[in-house]
Length: 355
Image (tube, rainbow, N blue to C red; front, side, top):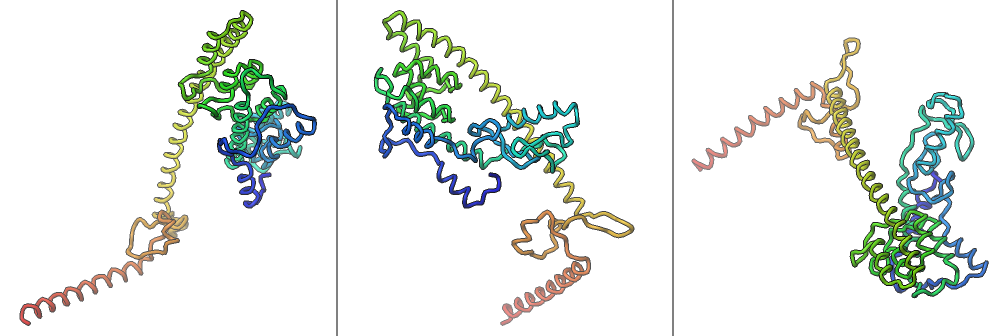
């Protein structure tokens, strides 16, 4: 799937671009009972394209990377785990040798000294994010269609499968509520617990500045039956623990992002210094067997007065200076033109005075 044409790729992006949240839609978002045929059709409609599914995990991509060893795209953690397991089975063979088989072709991964070399696949990541957002909007529509404590005709089939297919659980719907917030408001405890198992975000706030914990506490105050109070209290304890864990994960993620940015800035400084050093070496050249040899194309920074083409301007740090004979000729022409201008200026002044 990495060898797609541009036309196919653009068509895929247009196909999976997320639809905006709108009340005016042709699709009827209800949770009525489904026949087997309708259930199969629904699953087919929300199944991600094969190009957006990791061949190892068989789930929608979150962090796709290209393995240079075989050119295929995988989920980053999955391919890293695969490579480590393969290397452990190779009885300590160096990771820089072809000791790892491709998960797709089963051939030894080659073409690079280090099979652990991975490159972010930004195109596939963007397409997968768009598809998750599309499923997230659809999920919000189905949750919004739940009214009161009415039972779900499909038993939550549509909602559960949208979550399992990788719907973005950060998407907000009515009044800025995420899907789990709306389920808490509708007192759908079974579905709320299902969302918790899939690590849905809990720290997001709605338009009333309330998060999941606030909504659950509000529901506890409205309960009258003892069994319901206990059920909501147990849910509150579980959500509190998960909320604290989510906060810690966010803090760790922010720290990792800060460290990564610092490393990237340092790497860019190093590359900039290398580029300047290489430009200096290109200008000065290297003496080999008594002959001055310039590596690359030189530099334009010396500025000898000639104007290159716009194409050449793209390589301002690598344009060779003119030859010494041409520079001397240019200097002589400048002096000659200078004398001519001075004589013309003097004659014009005299004509103006005595004319």
